[in-house]
Length: 397
Ligand code: SF4
Image 1 (cartoon, rainbow, N blue to C red):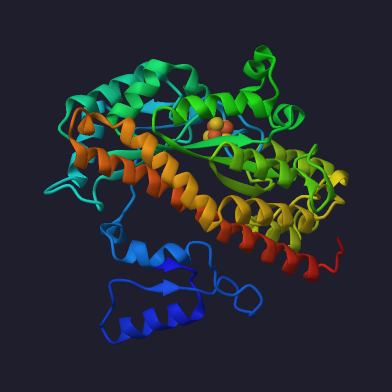
Image 2: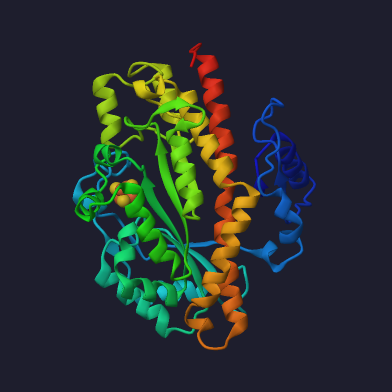
């Protein structure tokens, strides 16, 4: 199923199931069914192209080379976990490659060539990572893959080359904020390196993004909205506008998320101690709801004074970033540019004059860049949820 799980599409699935006549595809259109938010239109202009191309069969296959993470970002649900439970544990490279091969039985097409390597940060153990990548290089696999990874990977030219050659196509990077004070607040491990560089956060990030792009790898960055040093002076002067300008200037996609204290995070414990939750005290139904319904679309803590303590102000910035950075025009421009860069820097399968393989590599990079524009729908959803919650709790902006 694609799109929203609205009542129309769910009813039609259930009816077809009852009649033992399930279709191969269902598409939902209504994100919120009160008629206010309605259908989402962000990528619809591209639909005729996608429907009539091999891309309609495009699939992302998740695979895990290892588990665990070496960092402890305070907002992350693993940050209070004892080290031994979040330590990095690698699979045997042979075992991993055999799983990749399992998906690629038969001919290689858009259903079985694109993978998502699931670790939260691929850059956790360079030595082990290199042996995995070499194993892929030595295989006859034709793959493209997306990963979550630290921006410092840009400092290692050799590793970047190896990632690209082995099929690296798209990076999801946790940028989180362009304000150093916010990065310190969340215990982002990159702070020391940025300070050492003498650059601003935006300049430091931009320099690394350029290096990654130069290898033909597309990028989207995640940003947390609602951190203590975020600001909102007016509709044209706020943190959301700054992040939008940064993403459009550096030609990356954006995944803006509302600040939320996830159970298991350091921030979650702090909010419990300091009574900063929006929905009520521990052991109440409101408190329970704040845990069960809060996700990246809705905050569960009181936002900072600089944002008028308002979840709606946060939601409006999330919506602004995702709709501007994820607009069809922007997605098309970014995808076209990364297509060309990818074509010039192919994976191992496109090296030399293998024009068709180069073309496929380039298509995979471009598709990744286009797909992240879908966060526009998430931004809209966030805004709707916040509006509903503030209405429910009778709070004003
Ligand atoms: S946010 Fe990512 S890098 Fe930070 S602790 Fe969590 S998994 Fe690790």
